[in-house]
Amino acid sequence: MIVDFYDAEVIVNAKEQLLSDVAGIKFNVDLPHIPRRRDGELLATRTAEDLLTVNENLKLNKLPCYVTNKPDAMPSARLYVGDIMAAIMKLIEKCSRR
Image 1 (cartoon, rainbow, N blue to C red):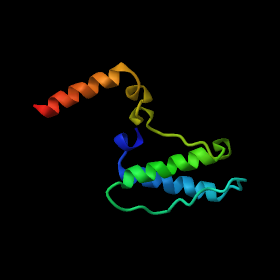
Image 2: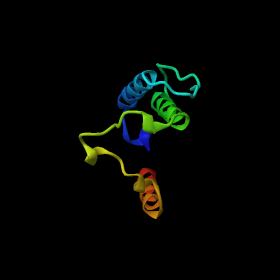
Image 3: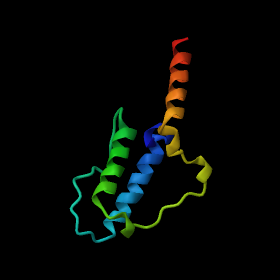
Protein backbone atom coordinates (compact mmCIF):
# COMPACT_ATOMS: atom_id res chain seq x y z
CA MET A 1 0.00 0.00 0.00
CA ILE A 2 2.83 2.39 0.82
CA VAL A 3 4.56 1.87 -2.52
CA ASP A 4 1.32 2.09 -4.48
CA PHE A 5 0.35 5.41 -2.96
CA TYR A 6 3.47 7.41 -2.12
CA ASP A 7 6.32 8.59 -4.35
CA ALA A 8 9.77 7.15 -3.66
CA GLU A 9 10.99 10.56 -2.47
CA VAL A 10 8.30 10.73 0.24
CA ILE A 11 9.13 7.20 1.42
CA VAL A 12 12.87 7.98 1.52
CA ASN A 13 12.21 11.14 3.56
CA ALA A 14 10.03 9.18 6.00
CA LYS A 15 12.77 6.56 6.42
CA GLU A 16 15.41 9.24 7.05
CA GLN A 17 13.20 10.83 9.71
CA LEU A 18 12.45 7.51 11.38
CA LEU A 19 16.10 6.40 11.45
CA SER A 20 17.10 9.78 12.83
CA ASP A 21 14.49 9.51 15.59
CA VAL A 22 15.48 5.93 16.40
CA ALA A 23 19.15 6.91 16.68
CA GLY A 24 18.25 9.40 19.40
CA ILE A 25 16.45 6.85 21.58
CA LYS A 26 18.09 4.10 23.62
CA PHE A 27 16.48 0.76 22.82
CA ASN A 28 17.36 -2.64 24.22
CA VAL A 29 16.98 -4.08 20.74
CA ASP A 30 19.66 -4.44 18.09
CA LEU A 31 18.24 -3.55 14.73
CA PRO A 32 19.45 -5.42 11.68
CA HIS A 33 21.58 -3.34 9.34
CA ILE A 34 19.35 -0.88 7.51
CA PRO A 35 21.18 1.05 4.81
CA ARG A 36 20.73 4.80 4.97
CA ARG A 37 20.63 5.04 1.20
CA ARG A 38 19.10 2.84 -1.46
CA ASP A 39 19.35 3.14 -5.23
CA GLY A 40 17.96 1.36 -8.21
CA GLU A 41 14.77 0.20 -9.75
CA LEU A 42 13.06 -0.97 -6.56
CA LEU A 43 13.95 2.08 -4.47
CA ALA A 44 10.43 2.67 -3.13
CA THR A 45 9.83 -1.01 -2.36
CA ARG A 46 13.13 -1.56 -0.57
CA THR A 47 12.79 1.67 1.39
CA ALA A 48 9.26 0.74 2.48
CA GLU A 49 10.58 -2.66 3.57
CA ASP A 50 13.21 -0.85 5.67
CA LEU A 51 10.46 1.15 7.38
CA LEU A 52 8.58 -2.05 8.16
CA THR A 53 11.77 -3.69 9.50
CA VAL A 54 12.16 -0.87 12.02
CA ASN A 55 8.48 -1.19 12.89
CA GLU A 56 8.78 -4.93 13.53
CA ASN A 57 11.88 -4.65 15.73
CA LEU A 58 11.08 -1.73 18.00
CA LYS A 59 8.48 -0.79 20.53
CA LEU A 60 6.92 2.07 18.64
CA ASN A 61 5.34 3.57 21.74
CA LYS A 62 8.79 5.01 22.55
CA LEU A 63 8.97 6.88 19.25
CA PRO A 64 7.51 10.32 18.66
CA CYS A 65 3.93 10.48 17.43
CA TYR A 66 3.87 11.11 13.69
CA VAL A 67 0.94 13.01 12.24
CA THR A 68 -0.12 14.47 8.94
CA ASN A 69 -1.56 17.81 8.03
CA LYS A 70 -3.47 16.19 5.15
CA PRO A 71 -5.38 13.15 6.44
CA ASP A 72 -7.53 13.13 3.31
CA ALA A 73 -4.39 12.44 1.28
CA MET A 74 -3.67 9.21 3.18
CA PRO A 75 -4.58 5.89 1.56
CA SER A 76 -7.32 3.80 3.10
CA ALA A 77 -6.34 0.26 4.07
CA ARG A 78 -9.93 -0.73 3.40
CA LEU A 79 -9.26 -0.39 -0.32
CA TYR A 80 -6.85 -3.31 -0.09
CA VAL A 81 -9.19 -5.61 1.77
CA GLY A 82 -12.26 -7.41 0.54
CA ASP A 83 -14.35 -7.58 -2.57
CA ILE A 84 -14.25 -3.89 -3.44
CA MET A 85 -10.56 -3.95 -4.28
CA ALA A 86 -10.92 -7.20 -6.23
CA ALA A 87 -13.71 -5.65 -8.30
CA ILE A 88 -11.64 -2.54 -8.99
CA MET A 89 -8.63 -4.62 -9.99
CA LYS A 90 -10.75 -6.67 -12.41
CA LEU A 91 -12.06 -3.46 -13.96
CA ILE A 92 -8.53 -2.12 -14.37
CA GLU A 93 -7.38 -5.40 -15.95
CA LYS A 94 -10.26 -5.26 -18.44
CA CYS A 95 -9.45 -1.67 -19.34
CA SER A 96 -5.76 -2.45 -19.83
CA ARG A 97 -6.59 -5.38 -22.15
CA ARG A 98 -8.65 -3.06 -24.35
